[in-house]
Image (cartoon, rainbow, N blue to C red; front, top):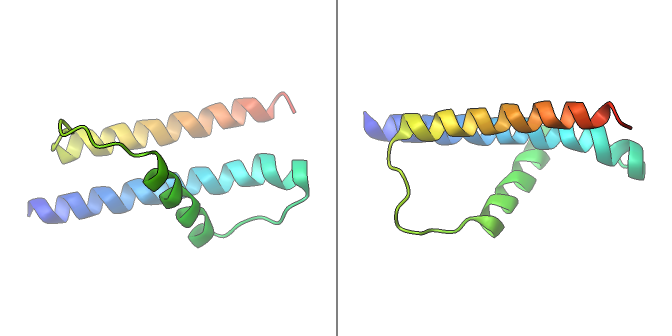
Length: 90
């Protein structure tokens, strides 16, 4: 049962980060550089690459799936809200 919770948390976290990357791309890269909008799979790829490049393992990571999911959701919502505020100054 714990494995299902971990996998669910990973999927939800990845999807939320993908939504944030996709929206940031639409808000900032499309109008600034005249680029095309990106699809969810592309946003997930960019998000995953960013995680791979910036993740550090210190051996003390919290194993509690619910805390990790709550942190991930809060981080994504905060990032999306801040991005929206940034668009007000464009």
